[in-house]
Image (cartoon, rainbow, N blue to C red; front, side, top):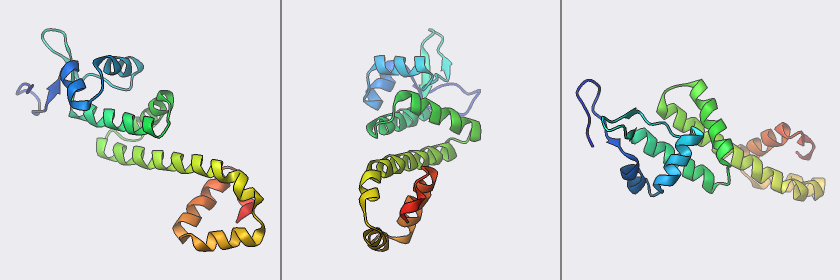
Length: 152
């Protein structure tokens, strides 16, 4: 559905259209809206909630983060912190991607902690020589953040 001339033209979708395009149910869209993860941009003359293309991007980010085992509360917190940083959606999207990658790395490092702690110093040195310097720096930074810097 295209809308008016008083603002820049953009696609606006009712819940059913948004559900069909995004591949999630109208009930899920209602749920996400109730949680504050999604916000309609306006209401139609018939009082239908209308969503835009940025909402589609946000749904994709939510589903991507859920697939990485983030809770809806964690996702909401991420969106809230990014909205405080900048209103620019592209920058927010990049920051959200980086934040999710860092969180995923942190989870993986936590899973590896017991294994890494059992390594002998010579084994740890060989392991860290075998991985790229950037990866080693990332792991070292995460370990420092976790208070486990004695492995490197």
